[in-house]
Image (tube, rainbow, N blue to C red; front, side, top):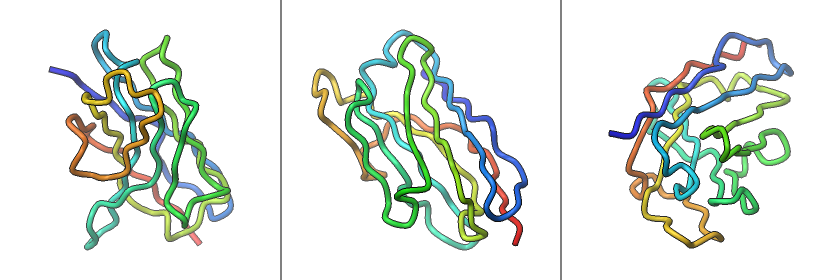
Length: 129
């Protein structure tokens, strides 16, 4: 069973920064398209950012473009989410996810929540005003 473990969440003031990490178990990390999602209280889980197998291609929800950066280090089985200029509206539990069906489609960036196979347990991000 593939395990995803997020870390790096916490409490930060508006305008601050956090870097989330997601460590993925197993030997197939380089074949997974990866993504970050978030869920605020009382709201549905939403897409935040996604990255292709090699890291060359990325996509973001409009509300975080220019502030968040997704990256991955395949040699370390880890995907990151650098979050700058944080706003109170970014407060949520952040989840990373892996799509094991990307195979050799190096260009694939997956934004649909239903396409992901594996999920982490989430890490809380709280941004105070």
